[in-house]
Length: 200
Image 1 (cartoon, rainbow, N blue to C red):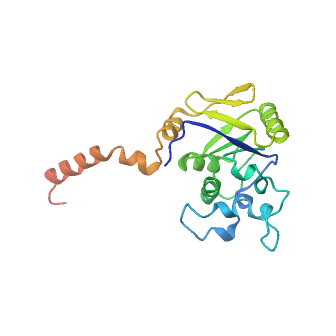
Image 2 (cartoon, one colour):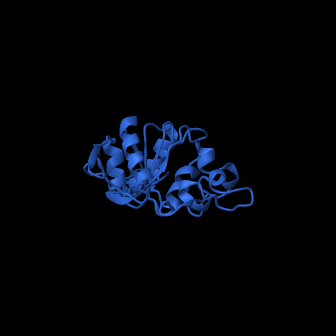
Image 3 (tube, rainbow, N blue to C red):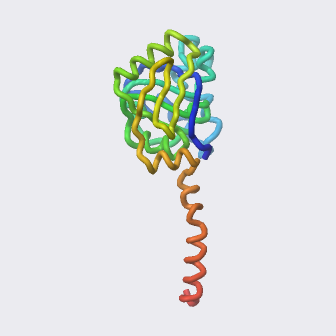
């Protein structure tokens, strides 16, 4: 998993509440178990018409937001079914950070496991950031995870993140990476058990 320390990037505004996982990546694209290739269908039903043509009024179809790495959105983001494909699709598009007032619990946890930083901010702060990036398309926002702060224009916002999850993101550790950190201890245990219980 790619480490997350600081990110300065274009932020895209998506001022919608209750964006569920089927809106993020519709069910017909869940056949794959690969984490790549889903970005093209991110927000599929909002991004394309019935013929598959991109809709010019959807934010991620418009320059410069096609190159956004940060998404600023509304409350209860990621609600609905607990599909891990949702963060996979966000990440494959290039989104490394989502800023919202609240998230569905399972989606929130899945973000951390897949290298995405989901930040929770009060609605009034979301509104300030949203207004700036809407009025100034292409405006960059800086996310400083070690310092737990967001810089948007001349304003700085602090955010909370659980220390364990922060450590995993900063060091690029997913569940497999965490296990591999204990590889030596696991190897030692297996060698000791083999000597003590060779009959097993």
